[in-house]
Length: 210
Length: 210
DNA sequence: ACCGGCTCTTGAACGCGTTCAAAAACCGGG
DNA sequence: CCCGGTTTTTGAACGCGTTCAAGAGCCGGT
Image 1 (tube, rainbow over the protein chains, first blue to last red):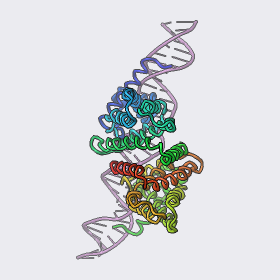
Image 2: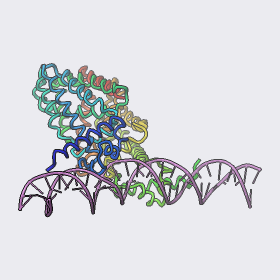
Image 3: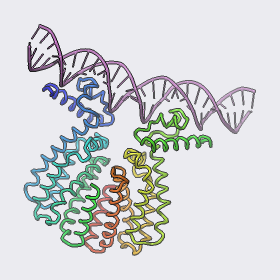
Image 4: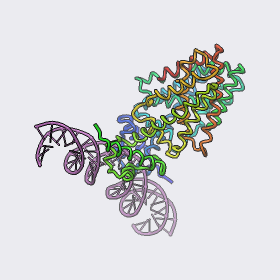
């Protein structure tokens, strides 16, 4: 059992790391500096977080939570799929933006932290909502697998964004601007048998991977 | 200018690192161990290789060279595109196989070493050859951009392979088995305007990224 | 033979992430 | 109030990748 005060110190370590990561980036921020900033000893921070990676993972987790909370309302109006895809992806960059200067190592550390795909539950639910509430509705045959494919797309975009050196991450925005209509068009065309076959292959490919 | 003897020591450091990486993996092999194994002092290895990463990069470079040399002849017969794609991708796994136990960090270190895409020249040329010698020939409209797309595919496969924990990397093989016909079918279908449009978008997306 | 300037080698040192045994603080029950 | 056990804190220590000032070996020119 842990006391209330302990939770407080834990939080102070977390916020100290947030402050320092923002100032100096992920790599340059040392565990010793985090300990000093939060007024603790070095060993104490390791009592709460087993590694620097785990610290990144914790911050990233709260970020994705915020992402879901912010993106969800945007799906209410029942726009078309392209708008939904764009909304979710734009929101993820919006939420992540202040953390870009943390450096690619931060995202890598966060994504590699303990769990491979870090409890995909919430994000996947968001994509399911995006698919189900889209009007016109995507073909029934795709409705089941599409969320997973879009979730894969999201991870790809985040990875790209993390390494995007362009000012303001313009390239990542442009990537989304291109990808959203592409996805929408593909989904519409999936009614054609030829395209449908491609989708089947793609899904088979993803299944083979996972 | 460097003497002939120096080149020898350099080579001995390289081969020592190869031996140790194979025995203990990339992460667990220490620079000190490499120095000891090659009969040099620690500082001496740093005289030849600025970092552990660079060591990985050097080994990886020679691997890709071997890959090109081995894959090129397989393209001579003028098979269809699917066979060519499968040949090149299978060969890359074949060449890389002994290095899988080096761990994902090895590939990451190699791919991140100094140059972003490490002089894509040779690999891209291989893909160009694969596209140009395929029979029937891919549509003219794709012939220019297809090599770049396939090269992207190759990097994706390698990345996937590096993290593939399945025994004998079966999953990676399966991935290739699924991806090759998918690519071939997509290329054939690119004669249809709708699919062509998708390709254009995809190429635009890649261009926006690079 | 001696020198000046290189190429190469060395081992100590730095700062890092991480571990650990021991001490301190805390807390409910006697 | 004090005691036993748990939770929290501490600072020293380890091994790592990397850096560096100093020296050793080598070689052509005088």
